[in-house]
Length: 490
Image 1 (cartoon, rainbow, N blue to C red):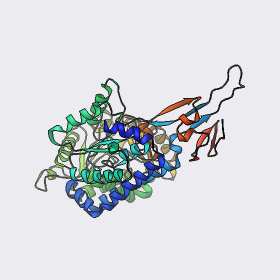
Image 2: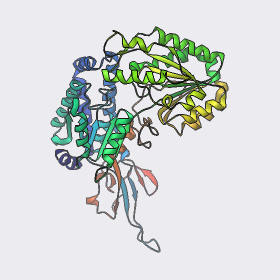
Image 3: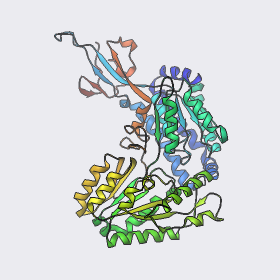
Image 4: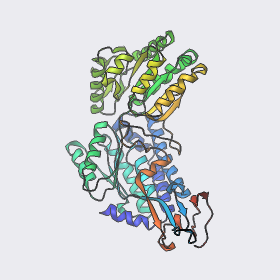
């Protein structure tokens, strides 16, 4: 109930106050200094520099949403003024904008303890929209979650927001599923943000859908992020492509939602050279630290499934070495090779293997490569390495991938998600369950809103953004023309 009270209290404050809150949260997180990074490193095994970059991304995201709230155009305000002289019936005054849904539940992610957890993108965008947030902390990094939660709560107090504006729940052990279920079923929760497995995301969506009043769940789930390496690109930049693919596939021990899980090529001498060079890198790599024993166990189980598939060849790395005495949460990176026909008929090769692995799929010709693109499940990203003579094939692959991914990368790898207005971090199922949305970037704020139309409303009853004497002069669509000018009296 405190979150619902906070929601109504937030609607009475100017939008600039929410922007100030987001900036204050960023400042308090920064003030935690290296102590926060040391705590997180101890809980996750992630390197200090990776965590430093992730903390900076978290604060940058908060600042981005603060700027968006101050600028104001995110609400999509549109104004169609009345026309009493129109025949045969007068035209009413109609004004529309996005309005916040209400309290939001955010489930912290295991692989991004800062950028996708307590004060990550879901929390930042929901607060920016005017929605109080209740975070269910991830059990793999409880101390990190609590430290960040204290920073957020401190900002809430300092700016005199209602204390129900932000809440944090620890949820580990056997009770974690029960707490998550009760949170989603609570009548005050109006939307849910989740980053994790396909099974977890679908389970939460089912719980939310079974409510007497179903609510939306925005789940970011599994993604194979296919990479297509075209013939002329191979001839021009083979060594560079190998280095990029290896670095991307093993980034953070492959525990990123955008690591490349499939590499598609047309059979050739250069393609064989790429496989050999990639295998050498995987063979030379030491076992890598996984985020948790559970993450390692799931990874090894998927590696075994892929290894046992008929027609799949292990080309680099050794799954067995990860099962030795290298530590309880270490796992070896592996690279597999298979044919298009094997890929086409083997469902397990179409699923994400979350960890430092990738599968090279060799196609016989351009038609098979296009068919491989058409067979890929929905993903967050799709990448195309193309040279000057690959234009026609690249265009064919692009058209196919546009129906299957949220972001297309050219001559680059999918890891690295820039928090900005143009970013799309989403995609068709199973990458997400809401393919029309993004979890990163300015437009992530729209998930926590719905459009409301006001017809012939008195000025005093309108939100600031829709008033004729709007003091904020936000960008609005007025009678079909974008404007920042006030309209004058009606």
